[in-house]
Length: 249
Length: 274
Image (cartoon, rainbow over all chains, first blue to last red; front, side, top):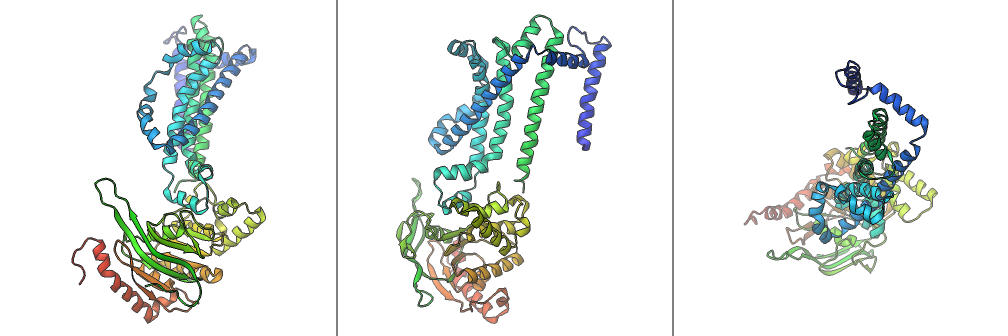
C-alpha cells in the first residue's frame, strides 16, 4: 500500500476507534449511537437472519433499474441533443438548474400516478441520475476533435457508424464519469424515497427501526448501505482510472 | 499554369477550383481560394507551399471531397469529386487523428475492418504496415503512450494499409522536430516509390517541399492561386541527402523569392511588393 493509502487507513481506523472509545466511555450516550463494533455484530446478525433479504434485493433491484434506465436514456438524449443545437439551447437553462430542483417534491405525485409499488422509488433514482449522464455525454461528445470526424469521412462512414465507432468511443471516459455519478445518485434517490413512503426496502427498514428506537437494527443497516455504496463507487473509481490512464498524454 | 509532369494521363484534374466562404450578416464573403487549375500525373509527387491562410488546406479538402468547391470542377481518375471522399483517396491530416481508445494495431486495422476485410487479411496487412513504419514493438500500445512523431506514423499507416492510389498529406510533419522530419521524409519517399501512389503534400517547410516533390506549386496569399509551379527534376531514387546538392539550395531560394512578398502580404504588410 502507498504512503497515502496507509495514512488514509490510519485516519479512518483512528476515527472509528475514537468513536468506539467515546461511546464505551459514556461520553456519547448509547441512546444516540452504538459503538462501531456493535454495528458490525448487528450487521452480521441481520445478514445471517435473512429477515431483510427481500428488502436488500428490492433496493438493489430498484437501484439497478434506475441506473440502467438513466444510462440508456441519458446517452440517447445526450447524443440527440448534441446533434440538435437549437433544442440544446432551449434546454440549456434546465441543465444548469436541474440539481437545484428538490426531486423528492415530486414524490407524492409519482405515488398518485404509479401507486405504492417500486415504480415511484425507481423514478426518483432515475430522475436524480439521468441528468449526470446527459451532461457528461454532451461534454464528451463536444470534445471529439474535428479531425477525427474528418477521418470518419475519409473512411466513408455514415452518421450512425460515426456515432457508434468514433464519437461514442471517444466520449467513453466522460460518459463513464456520468455513469459513476448515476450510480451514486440512484442509491441516494431510491433509498431516500424508501425513507419517505414505501412498503419495503433498506430505506424503509432503517426508517422503521428509527421509529421503534431499534438502534442496533438501524445502525446495522446504515453500516450495510455505507459499505455497499463505498465498495461500488471505489470499484468504479478504479475502473475509471484505468480507462483514463490509456488516454493520458 | 497547368500541365502534367509528362505524357502519363492526369490522375487528378482541377479546373477553375474556387472556394468562397459566405460571410455572416455584416461580414462580406471571404474568397479563400482560386481559381486553381492543376493536373497531377499518375505517380507524381506534388508539393504545395504558400503563405499562412492562403487556402492550402482548403485545396486539399476539395480534392479529398471533404469540402465542395464554390466553383470549378475536380476529378479523380476521370470521375468528378462531389462532396464525398472518392474510393482510392487516403488523407493524412495535420492534427493527430489517431483514435485514443484503440491500440496502435487496432488503429491501423480500423479502415480495413470498416471495409469488412477478413481477419487474416487485416492482420497480414497491419503486421506489414507496423514493420514498415517501425511500430512493430508498439503494436499493443495506446497512442497516448507514443511520441507525436510515432502517432503521426500510426495515422500514416492507417491510411496506407487501405492502399490509396492518391495520398493527400496536410502538413503531416508539422508537429515534428527537424531531424524527425527529414527521416519521415525519407520514409515517405520510400513508400511513394514502393506503392506507386500519387502524392499531394501540403507543407509550410520550403526545404521539405524541395526535397520531396517532383513539382512544387507555389501559392499566392489569399485567395490562393498558383504563382508558379517549379519542377525540381530530381531522380525518382532520392533521399534526404539531396539537401547537400547545390541545386537544392538554388531551388529552395527560388521558391522563397516567389513566396517572400506573398508571405509579407499575408502578414498584412502593405506595399511589400518590392
